[in-house]
Image (cartoon, rainbow, N blue to C red; front, top):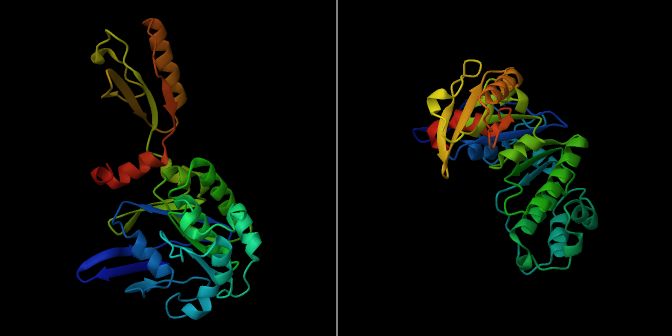
Length: 301
């Protein structure tokens, strides 16, 4: 996709974004509410033409050549439309009748962990189980490109991780996967590359390590009792940021790249010299959440 633009009247929802996804790669498209993710996905999935720019899926225009592209795509929307009184197996069989070269029904239900729910009516499924059924229908036709829109909403942690294993299996088989999610941990866990959209533009793109670089490692601890904030050390040029959590003041340092270990060493030396215990001491590299909040500014908060 190159230079995609989409407008609603005078409002430009997508302002010239570009990215590509290779076979055997998972690309996560993240962003704040209203950033333009849904409009972008609807365009790439072939539901609407681009106002400007070039969009290609498997070498074809997904809107103008939808008949050729759609059988090779798997799409998992945020909400699926099921017939509530059909069983899980009947639902899959119905979709198999509409899908060229479908997987066997028992195979696809086993893929998503619903084999033991085959005889259960859809209306009796939990929200997370319905999402797994959505995923089953998305991969039923052995797609080469799969779009997953908030795939693990409503799932418990065990089901979420089982779904991650299924998605990793698709990628290992050479499928190109585009993921949107509000679970940043999910993007960190699965994405080979990602982009963060804000106000219709891609603000950050790259691997998790690449987009996190430059956003600062963190060191934090509870300020010891009877210690004045002004007496806290400066660590490699970084002054502490103070916030109150419960009844304790917590000091957090945002450090430059490559300074986490020496800064931590200096902090522990300072604490020993002053005979101080640093309760709740933690040190971590910058996370995707840090990048997301920085990119979105005050709106994400």
